[in-house]
Image 1 (cartoon, helix red, strand yellow):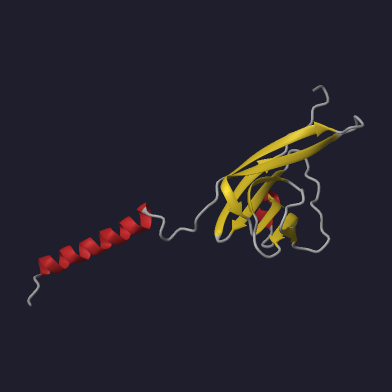
Image 2 (cartoon, one colour):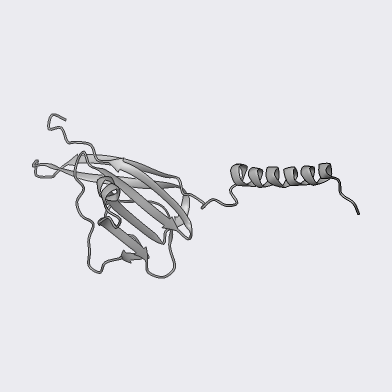
Length: 151
């Protein structure tokens, strides 16, 4: 069987276009991502002194979270191993969840560092939540707004 140069060129072109299509127009080689939304809140303390900050996170669907971590964005930019303000891992089987609030006890999870609790968040500081759910990853940057006493 004698293949002409034109046939070899067309086959090579077909292979290159197929690889480009798979690479740029499919999800075959991408790590699946999780869509996350964050809702920061500032609440007055019960005694009228200062404020408490809380952040609620929700996912696009129920996910079996295997690890979650909150770090300062500034710390990520300057350190190879940023300090985690809150770091939870699944104890055994990850429990599917649709959302959670920063620092709360999460069923089926434990602190990665024994007896560590979530550190308090500071106003006007950017943070990043990193989530791993059975091989799927997601992240979101969030910031707790400043408390205005006139509210």
